[in-house]
Amino acid sequence: MIRIKEKLSWLTAHAFVRKAVTMQIAGGAASVIQSLAGVILARVLKPDLFGQYSLAFSIASVASIALASGFQDALMPVIARGHSRGDAGEILTGFAYWAKWIGVSVVFVILVVIFLPLVTTNLYGNAAIGAFAGVILAASLVSSSILSVTQVAAQVVGRINVLALLTLSDMLVRYIVAVVLTIGGLSVLGASIGHLIGALIMAVTVIPIFVWVRSSDRFIPTLRSIVLRARSIPWRIHFSRGAWVWLDRNFGMLYQALPIAIVGLYVPIANVAFFKLAFGYLNTGMAVLGPVSILLNTEFARVQVTSPERLRSAFIRVSLMGMVIAGAVTAFAALVGHWVFLLLYGRVYMDGVPLVYGLILYGVIFGLGIGLGPMWRALNRVRVSVMINLFVLGIGVPLGLWLVHRFGTWGGVAMVTLWYGAAHLGSFIYLLRELRKESGKIVQVVI
Image 1 (tube, rainbow, N blue to C red):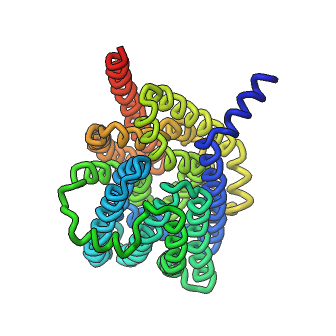
Image 2 (image 1 turned 90 degrees about the horizontal axis):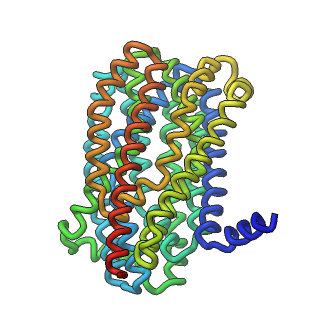
């Protein structure tokens, strides 16, 4: 008991643990909000219309590769290291380069939105799905601008409570508006346009918050200086690092969105809703891991600078912790799945419950990936991650198409399990080998 108390005292005194707990609470609350909104939308829209909404959301996610949010992840370690060194110029450069790509994203999104109805007409025989997806994509663009800049600034200066509040508020506002418009009779259009209206509300609200965050730290640049620097900063300065991380981050999104889009090609629209709810049900529980992964972007960079010899052990601990948490969450979700679906979604959605049981292995494997992205970026090995994911999807997409065509939604279950198993295990083994090499170099230098 004494050792347990000592361990708990150490954990509560550890700054990273406190930050992680704060973000997990916010992430958990955001997941509850998203889940409750999903329940209401599913109840109001019924399986066929909810299937349309699910497809629109997934297609918008796939189309979001046009956004610059991947460059945010690439530049987070740059900004964090600059802040640790007190280098205001490096911090400004990081923010400005990100802002430059946000401007490019605007052009990309406009082009994608124009063509989405044509794409969905050819794939699903429904142009409206593409129109709904375009609205959701526009909302994502708005959220990836000033709101994301403020979130990064808050994280860098250690204002984790602000970061948590912004994350929670964004989810709350967007889904409240979406639910209100849907109940008001706008159906799938209301569910889609609600995200855009909510994102615009948050964009306006967050500006004074950014000013306040900046006032507490002299190294955070003004919005005006970021925009001015973005106009003159060379494209090449962070392009190599940013482009690879952008690709790597989008793979994470594709692993989540593509399965639903693929399932929609071969099964009735109502069955898409069943698969979406089962897949989303488990992923909602996994949201407790998201905040930790976000914090690891700066934590691994800090350990790399201050105590590089501890980087490998920290990565192993975090990865195992992720699997344990994911396993526990998955087991609990499967145990209560029948009653959750019955009470929240109703009998019309009960065909999704067996799919939850089929996704148990996927849930456990998911936890292994908690530290993969941050570690790839810390070691600047993102190119290898991209190659691994290209290989997995290069084989996995054709295999997934065959599995879904042959086995329907159960083929979708097998598809996501195989994708994550191959990608996460391959990445984990490779990173362990690279970190062992790094540890060997450190020992040689010390000797």
